[in-house]
Length: 139
Image (cartoon, rainbow, N blue to C red; front, top):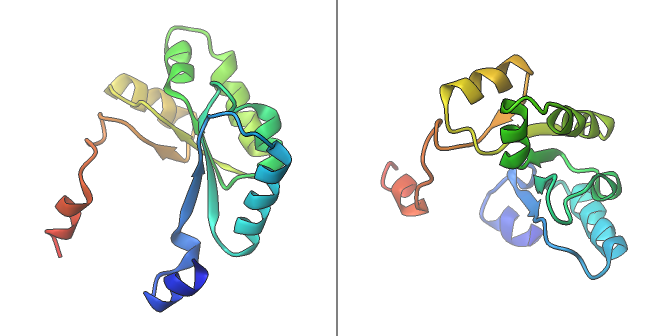
């Protein structure tokens, strides 16, 4: 993959591998693959932190660049149960990862996350997903 990216003139540091929330058959192998990817210059993001297999021990083993916090933790936060989202931020800080909060759908949610100094925001409030062909039309 490295050779192909270089042949295309793409910067490997801009490629982010996303580890999804599904259970791995072997977490040690997953952590080794992540370490190899990181040492090759790729970035790693853990998706949907707070649900299924996206747990604190996985974050500590993988040491991602970005921790994507599941929208359910945002919803808990907005309903007054702040501990899970704040804990997620602490987990990210402990491994020097940036925090991305998923599911920003209202201005109120955006403002609340902005006030927490979240690094990245994702959700329909900010823009709807588009097919890659939509971006290619711009060029």
